[in-house]
Amino acid sequence: MSLIVTNQSRVLMLEIIMNKSTSSGDRRLKLFINNVVPTQNTVLEDLTECTATGYISKVLSGSSWNVETVDGITSASYDEQVFDIEEEILIYGYYVTNNTGTQLLWLERFVGAPYSLPTGGGSIGIELSFTLS
Image (cartoon, rainbow, N blue to C red; front, side):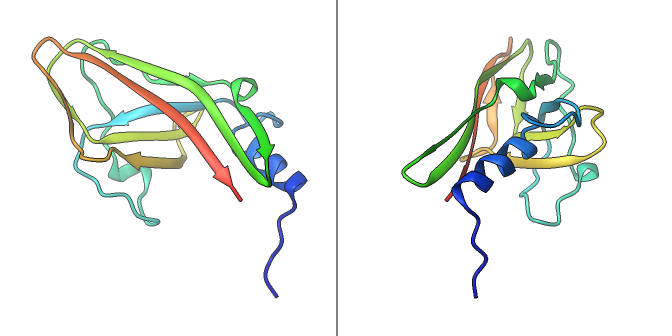
C-alpha cells in the first residue's frame, strides 16, 4: 500500500521545512560558485559560497513563506531575493542552510549554469518555491 499524505499534512510539512511554524531558526539563502552538479549525496562541504564584493547571504524568515493548497496541490513560495554583486564572477546555483550555516537543506543548480556576471558585476534574483502533490 502506498503512503498517503493528506492535504492538511502537506501544509504542515512545508511549514516545518520552511520554518514557518517552528522555532528552529530562520533559513539562509546562499550562492555557490563551484561547478557542482547536485545529487542526493551532495553535502555542504561540496559547495563554495560566493565571496565576491557586494555579496551577502539572505535570511529567509519563516513567517514570510506563503503556503497554500489549490486543487490538492500544496506549494510554498518566497518573495524574490536579489543579490547585488560588484565584480565579474560565475555563479552555478543557490543553496539553503539552517540559520547557523551548518546544515545543507536544499540546493539547485541554475539551468544553463554558470550564470556569468560581467566586469563591474550585476544582480541575480532567486524565486524560491516548493510543491507537494
